[in-house]
Length: 272
Ligand SMILES: [Fe+2]
Ligand SMILES: [Fe+2]
Image 1 (cartoon, protein in one colour):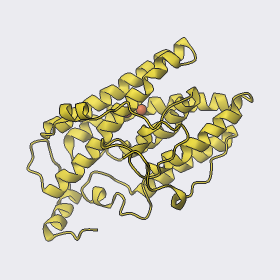
Image 2 (image 1 turned 180 degrees about the vertical axis):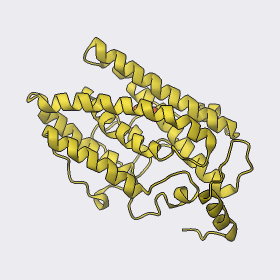
Image 3 (image 1 turned 90 degrees about the vertical axis):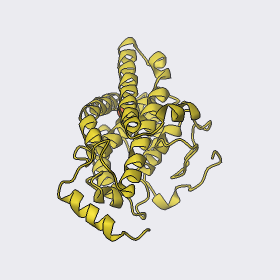
């Protein structure tokens, strides 16, 4: 881990005392680099996520669900657009970036677990590399990943970067609608004896994938992001809040949350 310079320490102190940045503010390199990292990760995830949901407009089980899936796809596209616009305003070339990567590419193996590794060179959170093969996956994705994203984004509500802070409120509200859709559908399937066993099978596959998105607990995690006012809590804190909600709901609905062993997660995959 790099040593912080006196200038870095002075910046952390100023941010702690309320310093904020705008798109055309002069930005220390350490701030810009970390800000861009988080924004690219969110923008690519929103975009890849929306494309991954798209086939489910047609494959949803009924007309009502088709409308809901279409709404979710539209929300993700809007989130992507808003964040790419923030990146453009920072002088990044998002149009070229979007042409350079295949955002609808997915891992061919439906049972894959790539641990903490990446599968391609775009910046999406790695759970967006997995296929959504069944309707159960779509609902679990809302239940698990939209909830995890909601927690992560909530942490941005007080961001020191003003354009992001201004954009995140409505994005969070929409993510809450997505996770509410997950809660409703997963609960219904869990209570249905004909559906529960398969739902549990798919939960077992998705659980480590979603847990991996919080990163390794041994790394420096969100430390630098917290110091720069780009996050409020550590990865471990956000993950604990998320896991508690999932445990409570699964216990109530008769689902078993699988054990998650961080050290057993793969570190490499064949798709770089
Ligand atoms: Fe989103
Ligand atoms: Fe979402």
